[in-house]
Length: 117
Image (cartoon, rainbow, N blue to C red; front, top):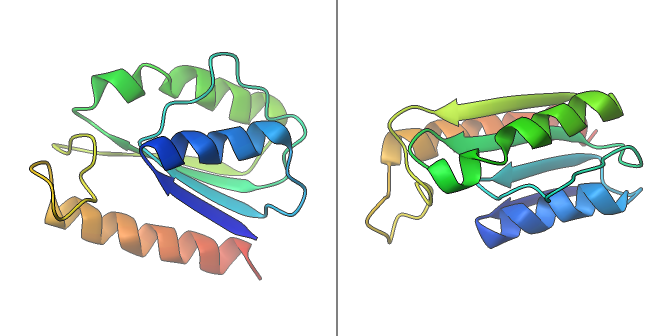
């Protein structure tokens, strides 16, 4: 099973990892804040974490998420999109960034293709 979430959904994707959901093979949280004290030691999923360069609120949790991913030994990649802000994937909002969204979409699909065999 794979999970992807945006904003609040991104935070919920981190929570699925923290819960150690055993069916979760791949996860892609988009600009969702990580838990305050993340512990992904029970997780098995490969994680592609998507961040927006201008999103200082969510980026404040990036280091603790990355440290928890490393500590858990999970396959992971952290991707920050330059010039993009929170909700850059939402094409109905003022922070829509079409180029970043297109690239992130391709990376999401490739991640799932690799890790959801």
